[in-house]
Amino acid sequence: MIETDICIVGAGPVGLFTVFEAGLLKMRCHLIDYLPQVGGQLSEIYPKKPIYDIPGYPTVLAQELIDNLMEQIRPFNPTFTLGERAESLVPQEDGSFILTGHEGTEIHAKIICIAGGLGCFEPRKPKIDHLENFEKNGVDYIVKDPEKYRGKKVVIAGGGDSALDWANYLVDVCDEIALVHRGETFRGAPDSADKIQKLDAEGRLKLHLKSNVTALSGDKTLKSVTITSLDGEETETEVDYYLPLFGLSPKLGPIAEWGLNITKIAIDVDTKDYSTNIPGIYAVGDINNYEGKLNLILCGFHEAALMCQSAFKIINPNQKYVLKYTTVNGVHGF
Image (tube, rainbow, N blue to C red; front, side, top):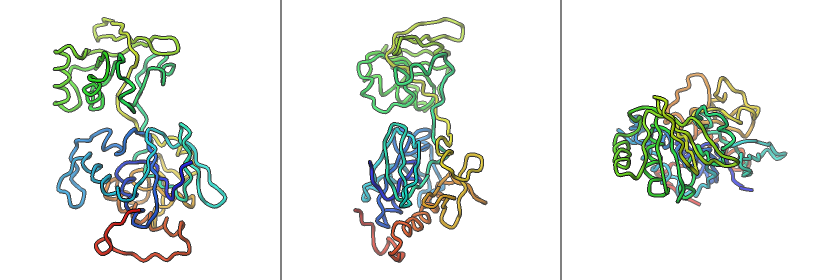
């Protein structure tokens, strides 16, 4: 079991900055996120999108901001459980919590901070008969370890950055790779699309435009997929893995069952410290709800700072805290 002071649910920008604020107060953090890498929406959906409202940065790319936040929290040695959804939460008699991920990871924490952005990002699944039969047996919605596909036959479906980036990367890993896209043009970065066209021309990748994967075949594991063009022509292709990379859809997920007060898909909090109706559980960032709420990263940073001050009092009830500025004290890790 992982032991920590604060378990942060969500490793997006606000979750990462929470580590910094907690570290200044000598509180250790462990983060859990369903995505296979840190960064939340910024890294998964629009890593190259410029952001203009981060103080001190006239403009900063989304992924650059995440990289800077990771460097900022490095002295505090946070630990991570990535590619795993926060599933159940059980309060303990001493006021602490045991959080369990959907793959069985257990985290014992004195404080829970929910920084899940718009919620748990779940994959958008194509409408294909018997798709669920092959999940974890040939169908993957997220690439956790590229080495899993080394020497294999892979079909990727999608037309956004994720599909393009992974197709460009895996072409040097897979034995055979194909990219299927229902349109004629891609939604992803033009440079990535140009690389795909070049790989197709070189015969290193098979590109199927104006097409969809319409059927899956196999016994217990996936053996082949049927690719159907818009004019009805069908092609059956042998595969080891089918990767439908159609983006992610935000949902509150299992957090909705934790007994928290929720309005629509946001968690109600007290703006004094962004605490929820359950003592010891806080919510910061886009996932919380209060009068006057603005879904801005910089607002989430403010919420994280106040939340950590409140958490410090719970973890250290007999210790008086005196605010010390980093300009005077600097930043000292563990």
